[in-house]
Length: 61
Image (cartoon, rainbow, N blue to C red):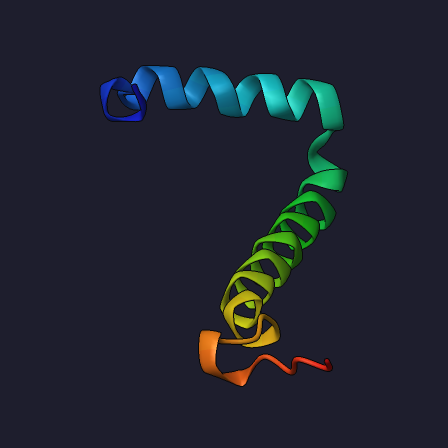
């Protein structure tokens, strides 16, 4: 679906965002979105490190 967006559609989306948030809030919105993506990527990368592997589990009998 994302591949079917053309230049006119992207311009329309940008215009709607500017109308809703205002031009002065766009840098803050972009910064927040970038930080959110960065945190998401870090959590995905560290997600595999937090889980114990099959041979590393402690079993207390």
